[in-house]
Length: 84
Image (cartoon, rainbow, N blue to C red):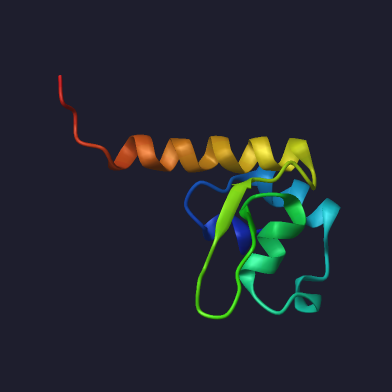
């Protein structure tokens, strides 16, 4: 959990939720498959060299998906310059 918390936007709640849900990330070939397991990436309908991404899937864990989206929003909010 400490190692996960070194990622921006990942705090103790997200880190412990990730560990509680899946403790064997080595069973996934890459990070996209790991994120797809939780429903964090769009569905993929690719053939040959054409990459076709569909809508965000609602497969996976809704609680974990909402936590990671909130963490990403917090990081993006810090990166934007104030326009007011």
